[in-house]
Length: 530
Image 1 (spheres, one colour):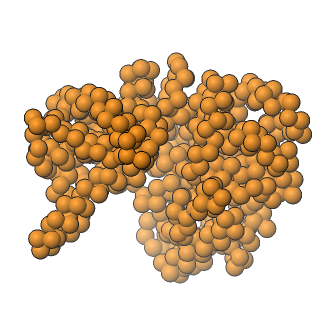
Image 2 (spheres, rainbow, N blue to C red):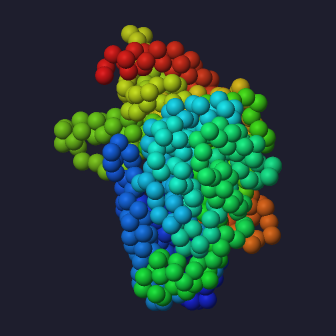
Image 3 (cartoon, helix red, strand yellow):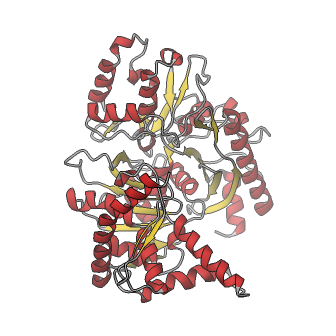
């Protein structure tokens, strides 16, 4: 879109605004009628550990939001010479899960407990067995039940329980609603009705009936809406809260607030059934859109939904490319010590590309990238490790392939549950994140690991915030979300797809045999090196 057309769209309000609260950055994206970003804004923030609980100051939510919006508005004025007075639609997304409990006065009863907390193990286990549905520690219901088990005084005073995105949307619109994808990380959702599972709500009410609380669980949870449905409008008070300058008008329609997993699926065109997306950075996880429910309970797999309400299996691994980056850094130190001058990107390119010349299985070597614990393999702590035998082929190429394979090893364990044990079938997988920046390396290894074609492509740089802006643009559309994304947003996208190579598939399988056997070594290291 040329500058004049963009300016006209901004003045006419033919735009959509998406704002996402990430773990380290609040991002705002304004898109035009062509769904491409016109301007972005942002604000850095971070959680803090207080009294053993990871939290964000509630005041920082609002000061950070205002700063991110102000940054966006300044970018619009600088680039186009106009000010934002209205937008066609808007929506908010944020880190999923966590615990935000409010009293009848609308104020927090206890500090916000984020998804990072691992203090709900007892509750998560009890609820998983009760519901026969995996309840991870980070889910809102796990936090609530842990507070019940701990007889925390505030529980009886709860009037409303929601997520961070739901909280912000509520304060700006006055509506207690939440998108189905974000809601599915609070409490199990029935994918037939698109609402919280009523039988499990009743189970929970029965479980805590003797506590004498004055609420039923369904009464304190938000109403659930799918993508496309309106979730209220920006109130006068909400407009002033978002934009203290007073320039932004009230009355802007809201898309249902969503979680970062859902906006990530939207931003990678991975909301249709039989599609998946893999994100690989600090952590690595796969979101797989299912055709139907799984046959068995798997505590390694989280079940959530797309923003349209389709069932999604999530294989989440705490450890991604951080250990791999540390090894690249070490090679860089050695090169610098010898006086070499080089660009960091070139260093990654050289080392990653070397892995393409390696033996298919990495030369008989093994690595674990566990800087933190890894739930999917039962490790409560991590010990990064590299192992070889006297007969291993110890070359740079094999070393790099081994560590690249290792960055996908835990994910493969989780995906084997879906692809092999459950027989889930995939038509496509989209990969994104720092691991895939070097063209043709990790993409091909992921294709081998999953024996599935893997695509990468240029998508908007602000990721989830762009995905939320797209959901705002979808508001009121008479279409299926997956079809709309495929035709209206990604129809002309430049996508590169790699098919799995038979030799690489066999090599990765061989590596995984060694990886599974080597978990005993990792366990010994965790136990021995405290």
